[in-house]
Length: 362
Image 1 (cartoon, rainbow, N blue to C red):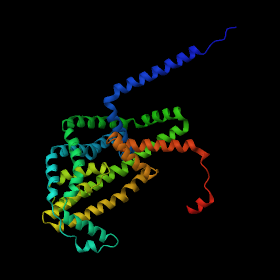
Image 2 (image 1 turned 60 degrees about the vertical axis):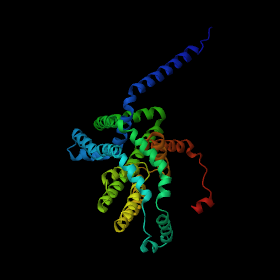
Image 3 (image 1 turned 90 degrees about the horizontal axis):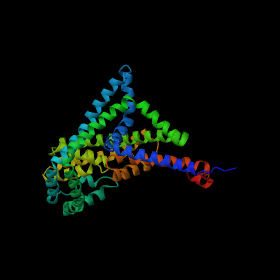
């Protein structure tokens, strides 16, 4: 009796896998122009989904009305300001260079007495202030200048891409509207794929990814909006020129986790150099308060959105930003959160038990 070999089955399986891989590659190639807007729209919709459901409940359960409101909100509060910020920075790049170069000749008076009298940090801040007053901002400007020049070169290179950026924003809004309308079906499909791929753990990973996106959106975007808004109000209060432009730069700096000091620090120096020490001190106090607010507001919002280690979130934010650009602010934490969850699930009950000495220390 002749025994059948498994070679035909192996060949058929191999060809099936290659066919599926080819179809996936071709699909991604066709969808390549839409991948960026699709990723952005997914991040935005996942982050704002609870808000949309709340609006829908107030609009008699009408999903179409809620979607229209959310699209309008996205245009007014997110995409229009970001587009204006990019175009403003590109348009006024020369003014930024002039303002930055003028800091080399800026002079700062000796530290005020109230700063020296501060407990714990007064002497250190007074010594640092005195050093700047003696040496000027020349050494600081020389240290920052290479990075500042590289940043402005990148901004200038985007001048010809403003139309493309605007088109991508509009595509993102259109895809977001579709996801708002049919979000449950899309989520069901993604969860079904995850269940098919990894069972219950796959479904948990999808849920955790959504929580990570929401936590990052709350912690980073909301904090950046609050910080840049307060910084812009401070610049208007003390009469610094180009307040709108500097507010746009602050917003992008806060998204990139650089903070408001990049803008408000030179503004404080300019006020002292212009013979306005009172307003310079006022803006300095505002700068310190906004910087301290970042250490309180951002961790609280992130923990509220996703119950994940803060170190994991921050590493994902910085690493994602460097690896994928602005959208990496969301992709990085999601990737690390999924990896973290899968690692814990894989370890399972193999984790060694805590010893008595470690339990007493904790």
